[in-house]
Length: 522
Image 1 (cartoon, rainbow, N blue to C red):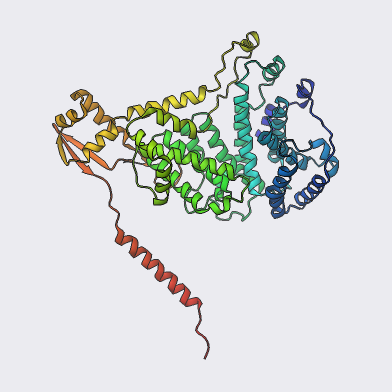
Image 2 (image 1 turned 180 degrees about the vertical axis):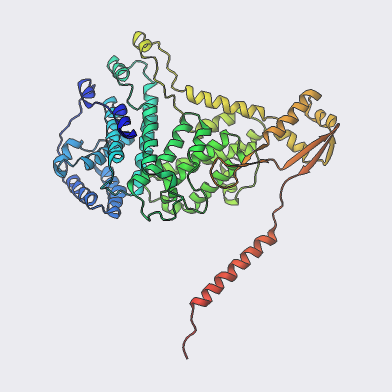
């Protein structure tokens, strides 16, 4: 038996158990508006014809326009109602359900039954992809990324829902207790890993003969790498999260992630956050600056995207995280990014540089991922005492916030020490300790802390987890007996090299243009 077949049985869900324990019966057959019938017919035809361009247009434009006009605050017709229009085609039905449940999550509060049914639909579709030797299906990369993104979002939403059981009906608690396999963290991770293996996604960026339009299996597997990184980040395992994205090519825009804007932004958001939590501030600043500059340069395209609001939110969160990183480790950043950052967070950065933990906590809580506790609560205790049972839905966030603030607290004296060191080339340690109003033992501990906190890994190419040890501060020192010797490690920018490089570049452009423009014949 293949691995995915064995997993399919372990992770599958019996629909009958949901129907038997249904809390709120949903209408299975409703009248379908004529415009929706036409949309379904055309959509079905393009999927059968494997016309990726037309599928993308209907998915990104038509579906959202119809949603805004007819289903802004109500669900689309259930799958049973549109089944006769598509000859009960099982593949199309799974794709339609994916859109149907995603719309419910976005516009309406889903019921517990709908959360279960959405899980079953993802299981059905992923198992179909995993079990097919030749998948007779082509879908745009945008849809496949959104599918993986939504899959993880619904897992995250289910973990949060399951932890808020106070005063909920006993029927719901019993359903959750009797179906522990639904949105189980092991099942979610196994699905993502199986998709990676099926699509040979770890080699996708390294294959020189890669297809211009990769297959559904390859794209699903590739996006699952980023999704798996996100899962590990939500669980607080930053080292494993960074190792997960090792196969992704981050340089020269070779990575498949650049084909989907939302995927590109998500990858850099989580990668930057992971670097920050691992105290690799140089890499975090580089990552955030790079993606923020990319967003600002391509913002004219974002306004036309149906995901514009999400892009704006991620953009604001990354500016907050960049403000935190620069407060902990001052670095030079792009002028455009620096200007916007100063407009948004100048006052807060000043407070953070003075060690204000409340400001650090405020920005961290706003900009960090919404961490989850994957384990189920104590259902027996909740059933015995549903009113007074303690729910710790924010426990995961509190743990990560506490760890981050502990790191901040350990670095409280670093900005002050740095500011004094910048004023001298040599200074007696006694004099420096007097400035800081510390006794000698505490002062030497603070100096060791400065050395430790300003030395870390910095990315040097290759996998995201690679790096060389270096100092992140622009001021370094060494002690010789009772004297501190300070050296400025800041590399001065050589403007001459900048101009010479651009002169050569313009010479090459003029040469290329001269070759292409032929003189008129006499």
